[in-house]
Image 1: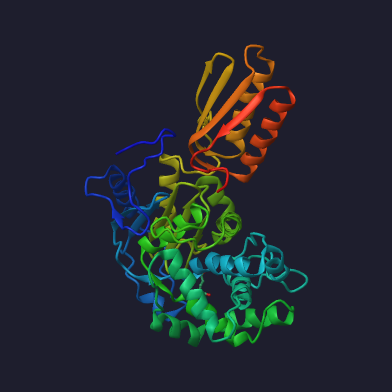
Image 2: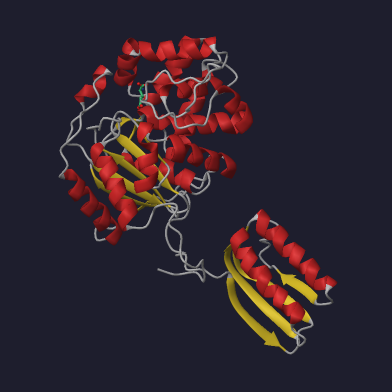
Length: 421
Ligand code: GLU
């Protein structure tokens, strides 16, 4: 495999190309080992309050991961189809935020881990659901999705879920009917939110679309691709399609990290530390920012409603392979590729992705030229830079002005136009 200067592998799939790991891939071996260990756990109960879910085979167990570069790794029952259930919630939240903006969505629903079970009557004093990742809040979020016509709303949701997964997703009609016939508690939650003035009615239409989104059929590979899309800022790394904005992806990951695991969100943050969402069918979707999307499916649930084997597998994965989002490298990689002096000209070559943190390193290095009497001009070369964030761009521009004000002639060579992207 070829490596770019910044240490990122440059080989791998082009967008739109399906890349599956070869049999001997060490990443597959890692996932297989984790799956084997978690298979030893026997606790938990398959959800049966939606009658159709009770038919799930408790031994089905699959794990998939999709990297930020779009490479897929699947072990166990990776082709087994199951329904999204609550895992649909962050994605429908993302659609609402994308359409209405964060502030308008949060006039209707809070952003607090309610510390209550998925079906709790969890409303604040105004009648607004507190947590958009459990039923009360999620039914309101579904009601907010705009599509031009009430009939079009679910189709809009289904098509965005499909873009996240990178393939057309369909509804498991028997699970949908089973919940539509029995889900009266969810109807009651819908009416309470309507009474609180936050659900966009009619309630039955919102609840029906919510039941349908919960019954969308997926595999663990779909979950991993959906998670990876959030993990890399809203672009599906397999298809290359931008599904939501970078900002919406960030808001969605934030809500998942505080509210995604029912009333075990705190414990999850401590032990796993990867924004995640679980569902009562036994799936867990986890999005390690900038790194991987992971999907796990194993139906037996613990008393909080999270898959027993799924939680164990993700805990192990996070701990053994440093995926906790608050685990930081002791020293961030240097964005400075080289610094050379030719006579009185200092040439500073940069590399990789330059974000605010990297730009802070760069500008402090450039500032040294001001105090160096041997240097009268500075040239900053961006040939090896793959991306420049807005924050980095403005920091760099301010430092160039600073150099010029100090009488140091400053030029930037940017043949690939990263400053304009
Ligand atoms: N459709 C399920 C319900 O509303 C989803 C619950 C969940 O996965 O948390 O009861």
